Length: 127
Image 1 (tube, rainbow, N blue to C red):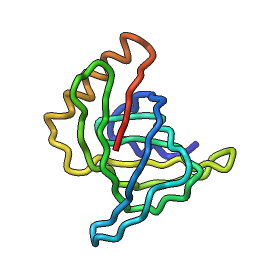
Image 2 (image 1 turned 90 degrees about the vertical axis):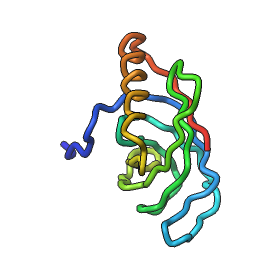
Image 3 (image 1 turned 120 degrees about the vertical axis):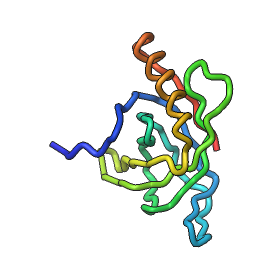
Image 4 (image 1 turned 90 degrees about the horizontal axis):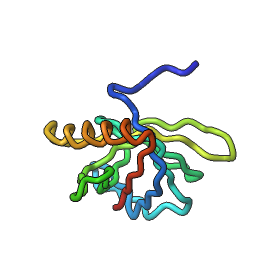
């Protein structure tokens, strides 16, 4: 059994993500990724996604999360902190939100309640 890394509950998601640019704090940029990315879960502290691309750890990307019925997106910076190989030549990545205001946790709380009520959530992510 693998060690649990999460600080908050994961909410299942199934959405596509396009990363136009990865960057590091010292202004090193990596171009767009070639393989599709599927976000599998969202929490107050980050997201999990799958991809066939090998993506370097400690890189960042900008994202806009559209969670459930919330009209305005949640703009955030995401840092890739974990990578593990899984089946079909894919990798699963763990990412954390960087510098997100704590008040925005309420948005994730509301989405969590919405998902619990529906038992099936849909969310959108864009870059």
